[in-house]
Amino acid sequence: PSATANIDSGTDVGYKIMYDQGLIQNERQLLGKLDEQDIKVIHLDRRNKLLQYVAYAANKKDRLENAAEHQPHPTTEAEIKALAEIRVSGTPKDVLKYMQKKNGDVTEMSNVLTKYLEPDALSVVNYEELSKDHDKEMGRLFKFLGVPEQHVQTDLAKIHKDKKIHEYFVEEDRDDLKKALKDSEFSWILEDW
Image (cartoon, rainbow, N blue to C red; front, side, top):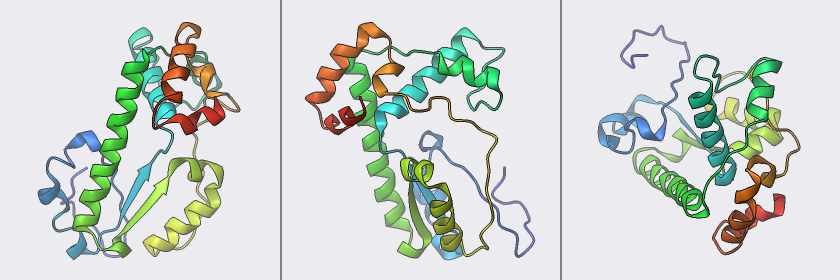
C-alpha cells in the first residue's frame, strides 16, 4: 500500500515493514519525518531467535517441497498438520550465524528507531509476551496508539503447541546444535530444549 494514500481524518491505518524491506538502509528517507507527523511505531521482536530460525527454515522447506499448497500462515487443520510435521535441519554454525544476525538486526533497528522517534511514538512488543498474555499486550498497544480497546482475534493457528525445541530439528542435528548453544550467548534457550 502507498503511504501517500488519501486518508480521512480519524482513520487509523497500519503498515507492516520487515527489516529486509529497506528500513535500515533507507532510514532517513523512511523514518525522518515520522515523528513530525505523529505516527506511532510498534517494533515486534522475538526473543527466542532459535524458534525464529525454525519458523524461517520450516516455511522455506515447505515452500520448496509444496510450492502449490504452501501456506506460511496456516488457518486450516490440514495446513497446520503439514507444517507441524516438518523437521528442520541446520549445522550449528549456520543456525548460530542466523541467530546472531537476527540479534544484530534487532539491535540496529532499535538504534535507528530511537534515533528518529520520541519515546512516546515507539512501543516495543515481545512476541513471546504477546503469545503468553495476548489480551494484556493488546490492551497496552491500544493505550499506546490512543484508540479504544477492541477484541482482536486471528484465524492463524499455532503450529507447534507444547513442543520442546529439540523436536523441531531432525535427529541427526540435535546433539551438535545443543552443544553449540550451550557454548554460546544463547545458552538460556536450553531451558526449553
